[in-house]
Image 1 (cartoon, one colour):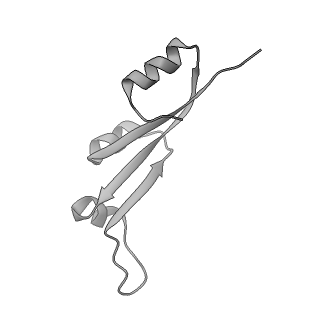
Image 2: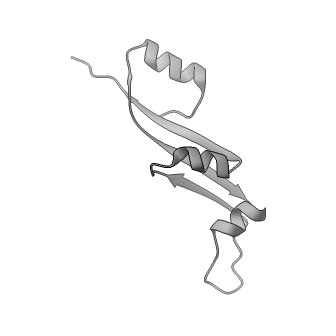
Image 3: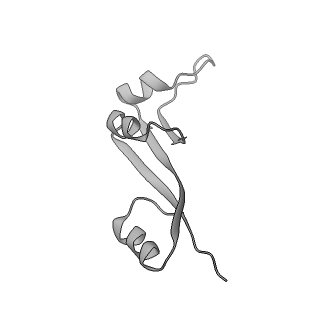
Length: 80
């Protein structure tokens, strides 16, 4: 697994690794992003920051909606 670092992804591809899966790391740090998405049902427990994995099909929408999003990609290489 690697994050969306171009040089690392190119290295995997150059060395014949195949992309098999990916998901998004989504960070929400206070403010509007967090308040619109996360709330506590416990009295006096106030979320101030969150880290989430998005595994759905609307990745481009998530990338537009949140400021801090990284794609994590799984590369695999079959050894014979």
